[in-house]
Image (cartoon, rainbow, N blue to C red; front, top):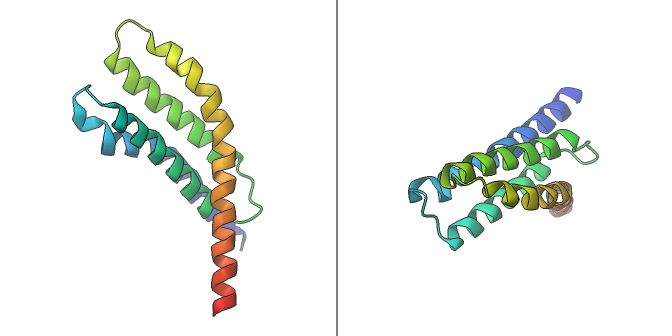
Amino acid sequence: MVTTRSTSVTASTVVALLAPPAAWAAWISWSDGKAGDAQHVAWFATVAVGCVLAGALAPRGARLLWPAAAAVLSTLVTLFLWWSSEDESGLFLVGLVIAAPLVVAASLPLLLLGQALASLGRRGGASSA
């Protein structure tokens, strides 16, 4: 049981870590530095969905510190690499300063939302069986 729980937390952390670069590859990488507003919104929405999915993979009652830290770190690193490649003036750092507290504040609630949705799905699936 401990191994399964540990494996679930590891899977949750991996999803949280990979969601931002995967979203960048899906929405931004092919735009040659000319990503439109819709692509930026799609990137942020995809990262948020990845965080919810990471929460859904974590077992109920699991500590979400590692998945939350992975989500924050990966999101900020991805934003840094993305924005620094498009802006040589350094003004992208202002965007990072603005984004960082929002990313930190959103990570745990999104993980908890995913965990709650998964719990509802498990409970609903068990009662209908």
